[in-house]
Image (cartoon, rainbow, N blue to C red; front, top):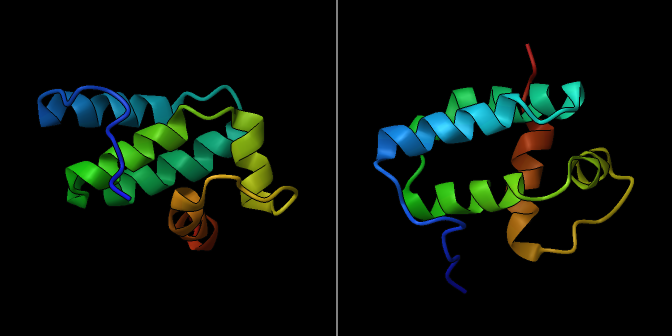
Length: 93
């Protein structure tokens, strides 16, 4: 199944800046750290479908993302599974 982009593609540099901002300014320090670190390490190398998937994840509620990352709840969207696993396995230092 092809992932539809969450927003119309912007110029890449603007899109990446927007995703970085959204990753680091979630409102919950824990998810800021996990998402922001991941984005700083991986965003530049991601293609448009991967960026669209990442943006779709950012559209989810912080509490839900945190519960998926900590295993308190299963993520209901199968397309997020590889991304959630990548986020969980990254070192934060």
